[in-house]
Structures are given as structure tokens and as C-alpha cells.
Figure 1 (spheres, rainbow, N blue to C red):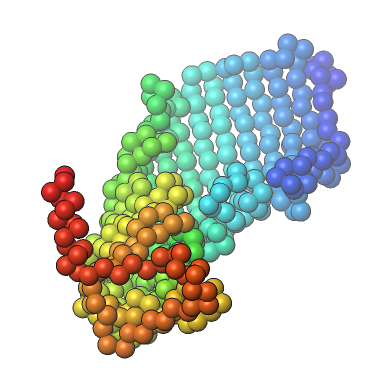
Figure 2 (cartoon, rainbow, N blue to C red):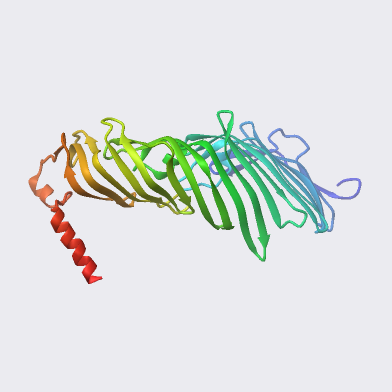
Length: 374
């Protein structure tokens, strides 16, 4: 009980288990972690309430008086991002969280403010850079200005700025994202094992509009020093300079990108899209046209259904969800093509049609037949 006859609740050293990590309340066992309140339960003061774990600290303090006055403060000091953020199926986040979040209210006047920094941010273990986020709300608590950017190797490579508005029970956004030689490597980890060695940098911009939980995105990126690898085919391709990739809320669109295989320097043209649902449930719809392009370069192994080297004159496509891709090729092989199919059990192979060979004229007849039916 205080001199003003207010009640005091103090916290001794206590344990809290969150995401399988052990945190402590008042690990230092001092007298500062306490809550002071009056007998009407309308006025509260929070004094130096600390949650700690391995030199990582989250401090909360402030006060409130009935429903007209609030002054809340939350500080972060070297907090591991992975230990305080929700677990996601396809994305893991790492980094050190520092900064503060403040909220003030005096009758109908509001002053929300957040300024946080994530040092050494990683997405799926790939370094992204240092992320800075500043959010400031207006006095009506309806509009929030956002200023965020990422620094890679001492240079600002990405920023997103704009506003978030809350009106009529709807949250909408009006944001602009800008890329300046932004490293593409972290994006490859989101797709999984179907495509690897995603590399290069992106420069461009995107507009983000509409509902916060379902925004529309319209942007264009120009890629340089870019490329990727298809591990199952063991082929690696470089993209042409200033390769164009358009982005929307649910796909990346490849626009007539000249590609060159990195081993034999054969060439082709890539079109199509990579689709996703909030960076999950990835699907490919990619097409390649070429006069001579390396499309297979694998060696024999115990679980190989086929192996060898193949050069294509024609077109090919890869379609479907990444868990069940369908590969289609129309064309002819070029010089130095050599594909081998190991046969260890003829009956087993006969029951599993991994390959279907169709003459080009038969394929055209099949397509014409489908058109007539439609």
C-alpha cells in the first residue's frame, strides 16, 4: 500500500515458457517490477516490468487513468526475432530486434509511435540486411504513416513508404516499394528445392494498394547478374541484362527473358510465371523456346529414372504445383544429346510411364481435335 492508499502488486523472479524458450519476469530480483492501482481499478501505473532471456530484454512501463488517459511504452533490446514472432510454415525469420513502441491518449487526442530496427535480418537463413521501420499515427488514430527500408552492405537497397488508413471498420493501404540493386538470394529460399541458386539483384518499383489483408500489387523489376538453377535437371541459367519481371500480389511474370546455360553457353527465351499464395503453395507455369538449349545434364545414380545430357531444338514447359510438376517438350534433340534410361526391373519400368514419346504431327492432330470439340 502506498502513501496515497493505492495497492501495489510486485513480481518476484518468475518463469514464463514461450515458444519453448524460458523467459524470466524480474530476473534481477529487484523491487521495481510492480503495478500500482487504486481501489476503483481505474488508475494503473506499470513500473519497469521486464521480461528477459539470455541478455534479451523487453521492458514495459506506463500508466492509464480510466478511459481518457493512457501512456504505454514497450522497449526491445537485442531480442531474437524468431523467439517472439509467430511460427510460419514456409518462412523462418531471424535477427535482433531493437527499438520501442509508444501509445499515448489524452481524451480524444492520440499519439501512437513505433520505431524499431531488426539487425541482421534473415529469411529462411539467407541474410537480407538491416531492417528499419518507423510508424507514426495521427491524432485521430485513423491514419498511420510508414517509413521502412533495408540496408545491405552499407547501402539502402529497399524501401517501402506510404500510409495505412482505418475507416468504416476497414484497413486500407497506399504504399510504394522501391528496389535498388536488391539481393535476390533470399527469394530463392521461399520457393523450395525446385529452383536453387537464385542470384542477382533487382531494381524497380511496385505500388501496393487496397485492403491490408488482400492488397493489389503492381510493379516491375529489372534484374541484373541474375540467374537460377533447376536441380532436378542439373542445369543452371544466366539471365540477360535488365531482364524484366513483373510482380503482382500472387505471381512473378517473366517477360521474354533471354537465358544462357552456364556450362555450354546455349541459349533460349523464357516466359511464364511463378505463382504463390502469400509466399506459400507455389506453382510454376514456365515456357522456354530455343534453337539449341541445354535442358538436361545429370549423371547416373541409384534412384535415377534417367540421366545424361540433352540439347533441345523446340519448346518446353514446366507446369503445376512444385510438389507435382508436369514437364512437356515439343521439338527435337540437337547434336551431343545422350539420354540413358537404366533398366533394372523391366516389369517395374513397364508399369511406370515416365516418358511418353509423341510424333509432332500426332500432337498437332490432338490439339486440333480438342479445338473442334470446344
